[in-house]
Length: 393
Image (spheres, helix red, strand yellow):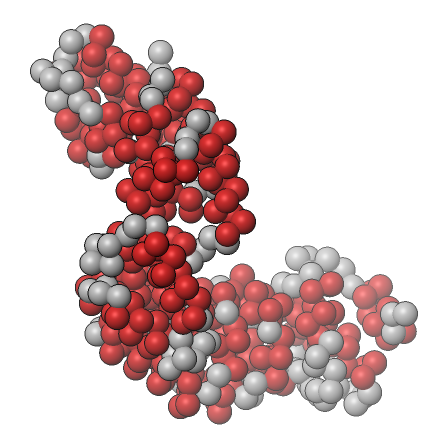
């Protein structure tokens, strides 16, 4: 049952977009003011509660989260449920203002509070500022830092000296520069949650033992850091399975196949094998295509089905061509394949090509290269070809 005080408070409330609660007008700062990182936010507090009881504190916390943070009533009540022992709103307000002054967006702050409301009890000076300073020294701040923290607020519960800083240094040992560490963290902040001595380091050593080159490991860590949070036992199982599929450990495709397989369960794999079989592929066809393009089964069943249907039933490409050029399935049909096929048909119908082109290479060329070579370079026909490309009749 809703507490009487809360019912009364909420009944008197107006839509927060049209008013400010009275106690906000008495605050010693402007809601739109901006403060530097080193400003103390501990003095930015609401007046103490008039009652120390739980029922008295709940409406004030809820109102703070609704009117100052912008949470819905339901979200604000859920978040406030772990803050009922607080006697004042001083700590929650201090944390919120610190995040605002750190250039976190409203969405970032709302997400952080909903995911980890316990952070509103944190001591800004002792707990939050040292962690933010570690990220600032790395070159990570403002909205970029807000994006990372809001994706994984549990980071702010980790020890600065024992976990955050050592993990940043571990990443720098492999990626070498602050800029690359920032890029990796933007891809996945989860890597800061796991014990690197039990996940990242053993996984790197395992891949090295299979012959994966340092340059390849560097690229993977930069582009797919979350892969290195998988249990080493699981990575070894995948590596052995990939070897059984016929991949040469000395080939770059070996590590790509491991990465692709790491996101596939056996059920998902078998489901996509059956999908291909429904279009006339054999088990060997599937394996041949996978060895050529390991990310084939990372595509959704919908995308694979649409690709099969279009390439086989519309373009009339035979099975052997598709097995030999599986990268075609990764391309957008509406955004790339179909418009370029229209251009190819137009070029052929007007005999504009000195020699015919191979369809896959025609489709995978970069946009600017494609337009310059196959559209804009044909003089008086360029405008016509551009209309064909855009689907303008």
